[in-house]
Image 1 (cartoon, rainbow, N blue to C red):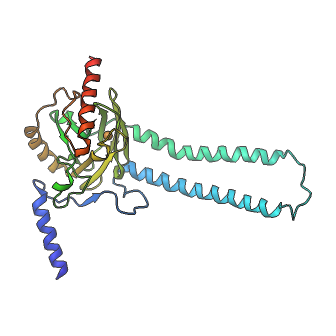
Image 2 (cartoon, rainbow, N blue to C red):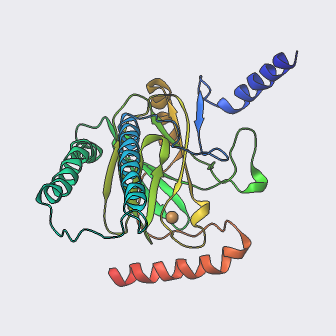
Image 3 (cartoon, rainbow, N blue to C red):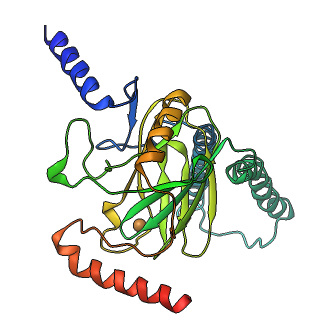
Amino acid sequence: MKRTAKLGGFVATAVTFTGMFATRPASAQQPEPWQMNFQEAHSSLMEQIVTFHDFMLYLIFAISLFVLALMIYVIVRFSEKRNPTPSKTTHNTMIEVLWSVVPIFLLVVIGLFSLPLLFNSDDTVDADLTVKVIGRQWYWSYEYPDHGDFTFDAFMIPDDEIKGDQVRLLSTDENLVLPIGKKIRVLVTSSDVIHAFAMPALGAKVDAVPGRTNEIWFDIDEVGMYYGQCSELCGSGHAFMPIAIQAVTQADFDAWVVQAREQFAEADDNLAPRPVRVVRDDTSEDASQSTSASAHANANMR
Ligand SMILES: [Cu+2]
């Protein structure tokens, strides 16, 4: 009975919040209370990162235990009581070669795993689509240059406007909608200060630097919501500029693009400073100062 009621509630929520998408987001990737490890991996890049992380953890454990064992042995075996007259030996070629060669070997092994990962994360060629992400104080703007070049801003939903399955501090009024199973190139930049585009479940974390375009790519394996946050201290609204990615099927994405092209105007002078939407009362003073500061900086650059 309880289960049925729950199911009914679920269906009702699904009907209410699916909007134009036929399928309700299957999963939501977000931080959990007392979470100890990474969020579940939902891109091939993140899977590779998790594998590398696990491998490194075993290696670190082994090295730490080995060093600990050596120290305990030395403390016990060569204590003053057991070894009143210490040896005056100063060199042992065998040991010196070993403690040089073994760490070099370990570093090479680590490199065999980490360098391909580094190159892979940087390999944005042959992407199926490109989106441009612009960090601003304190929200994100998204652009779809190869789908009609439309652009829109995404603001955090304030606490008192949270509805349904929206997540406090993570949901935004507009989502970055992306198709699953496609190689997505993300160009990341900023219009004011340094932000960072971070999406844990997809293995993406890139600085958004004014006057510079950084790149990352990911593919998304499952329909659902993916939440991330700005990960570079960027001012008083730093904690209030979340990133919400809505991953949908290609068909849903195509339908959304048609609708979005009408809804959002073409990308204009997209790096010009825009008015700051005040997130909290205590930030308003700071916000206006920062806007005029960045407007001033921009004026100087021209
Ligand atoms: Cu930021």
